[in-house]
Length: 113
Length: 110
Image (tube, rainbow over all chains, first blue to last red; front, side):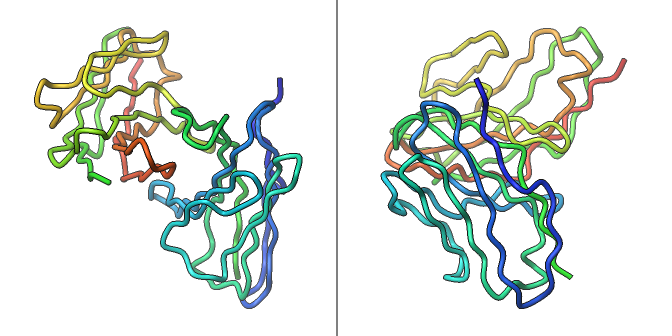
């Protein structure tokens, strides 16, 4: 049974560019959350998708947007990249919108130069 | 969501019990205490959660004080593979987001 998978593993972008990160949830899971983890910090909640809609959002600007597909996979899009967007981006999935346990993927390391 | 306070780092000898404390003095009645850990270069991993009763699973035990203002995560027989950052999180039942602090870096020594 595959866990949460994310692609790509690493990515390097230039300031001002746009990036799309992808996440496939664990089998049987229908809810996906995205987190940003800066170096030396704990993960920060970006938003959560359930039934193809954004259900909750953290304190992130509109440059951060997402999408969930009918197969429950999800994308995180970041426009107009800033140096401060350099971080590990984590995807977490769960079974049901209010499940107790979230399963995290290994993350995508984004570097903005 | 309530904030949590954890020591930045702790050491533990391999084979001994690791006791990781967490203060959450502003916790509300409907908020749960969660513990996750993050091994270097991996995503966080769920360990255990509880509301007010002590909980135990195959990984750890969670002891919550009677006033619910603090808790302790116990790893009964720490191994080198338990070296990680441990996060204590307080989460309400009607919200999905986990609010991570900076956690406790547990270093298990041989």
